[in-house]
Image: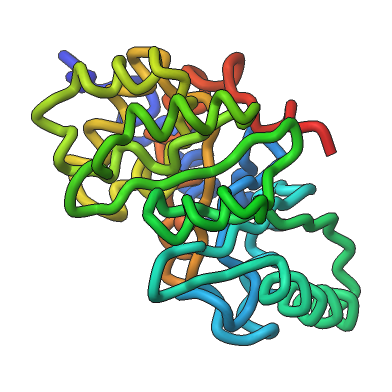
Length: 266
Ligand SMILES: [Fe+2]
């Protein structure tokens, strides 16, 4: 925190600077943009997971992404045992309906889909029978359960890498069971995982601890991708606020040169 020994010039009473600052305070702020243009983690495909419930709600989320400067989207519906057992057959038609709504609104946004794969028996069975929906460059966005690390995670990482997949762990900062075991993050990276941190974590939306760990990852050069993980309008409000913050400017400066989002080839 910066503590001023004396008042900075712009706060001195009655100066011309103060007058100018007063007027700029009332001026509507230009919305801040993201410093990259590819969102590779969001739940905008309507009606098939806990994200957008309708095409209209999905299109509202896309409008927010567009406002933030996003120009390409990889939609990533959940693939999770028992709850969201999505396949190409469930995702493609729902995405087509979303695109119809976007086109009715005159929004031209390239959207492809992959998935956010929970590492569980359903996902592994799907992979074993050859049903895989990778991102460009054969990236797979995978997530751990939130309660505990999957059994045999290291073996699973190894097996998927042998099959030629490039694995990206979604929001590693959200798995609380790693927070008291930070060296585990380095082990996972050494095993071949790239890390995708959520904007919402950096915004403090999930809590102080998640934000602290996400910032620790930035400091330790562990952040390869950012994602919105947009599900609902509350997330839009949180990201809007974050983009106006000093934290965002600080994070942006640290990440600008290393983020891989826009290098995805599609
Ligand atoms: Fe997600």
